Length: 314
Image (cartoon, rainbow, N blue to C red; front, side, top):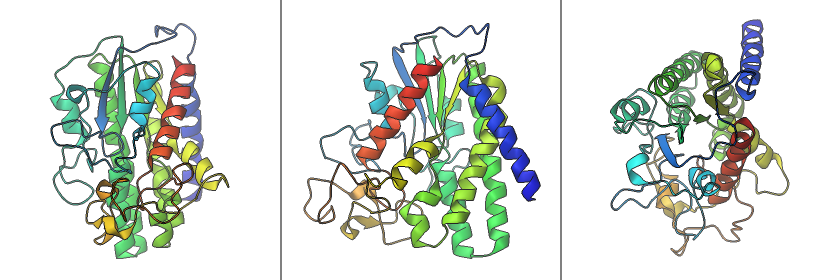
């Protein structure tokens, strides 16, 4: 098994190099400047732009850019519009049951329902897989058996293949510039530390990435895969940031992030509400709003990282 996994890692590494290179004879226009952003995915890309939707899975109401897609779009003087952002909190890739066990419009359904077409000036963003990692990871953590862990790994690999199929569908439908942000390393979250499952959840994250990259490697002309594990790993390990500290207090606790009841839920966390942020909270240091989801700071850094990769690629 170790040999097989090592071989798959090498294959994924080679595929990632292919996806990162522009390649001779590419028909992709250089110096790409999008005029529209179209977004599919889960809570990482759900900006709650619809009527009455304001509670993102980060720190809300702090007056800053608090979503990585917004940060990326700002480099092109673009503002994501409700009509073009189909991402939904807790959406899994194909299951109609979200990360919390409550119905959520899957990424597959989001893409199937898209009727807006695509042009060469569209930047199509897919930010998915986080909910699948949370759902499968939590099931295995709760069961606490090797069999449950093996099942979770198998299910996560399948989810990655299903996401690759959806990316392929976007390309077939005319999308010429597709940026896929992979889930960050769940093993580097406060959740993983709190349940003593850092190694397992890191493996789960790695398996998703390996499977996804391998299955979209032939789409390198139109697809850019951005590995968010690289950026967040570096920040968690840096002394410049607060590591695994959680910014929101138990006052903002509920059932909304898929890791059990009574956990801090960033969608309930508002910087303007007394008691919602821990004493001594530093907006320039904290990376996690709750045990899973990033703060506005981490979102902005992810947006900058994605932009740097996009600018080099196209």
